[in-house]
Image (tube, rainbow, N blue to C red):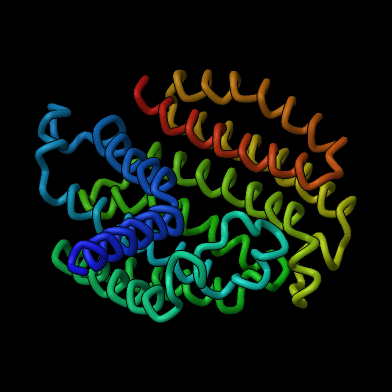
Length: 295
């Protein structure tokens, strides 16, 4: 009898860990942590040695608190999107399957409190940024993501802020850090709109008013062409101001995959096509993060 109970507890514990690993998007959290460490090591001049950044408890707390807030955001997003996800991506549904709704809400609250508290240990400014981020992620999941463009802008802003907050930590407001924050904002905004095009079927059933639903796929694509062109111009303009030729060269190289991205976007008309483009945006984001190494 004791053996059976032990097996059951082990099985439940395994389901719990699997559920939290899936709902918090661990690969995305690792990329977020990598972004902040590379931003500090390669774009900041506070310390001379990269080893000093690795041993800096303030950077560790910043990254840990940011990752915790992001994990809470993923959790609440899945909580509110159960019905939509059963249509858009039923294989990824965790809430109600692997994790009880009550457990999910407790975890969301606990993570937000912990993330904001860790931010306050660093400074009131970072604590405030974390509080705003936590609120915005909740409000996005509850309301904003169902509205045209506003939800996309909210997530894109938080993506850029994840880079810029490193400058707040070290009080070193270098232009190159904000160039990368702008890059993160741009790629994230494009990807969020692409995801809306991918999820249009389920979103429409539950009354969402995203751009692809109110404008249609064709007009939404036209907006993306304009946004891509504008961001390319802006990034070249900002990199020119920094006077950093390596950064300019990176953006020149980036034009080739962007041309490929646009070509695929022109002919994209299925859920699979848009899923590919969404993943391609992730690769562009990762390439931008890794390009920091060359500075």
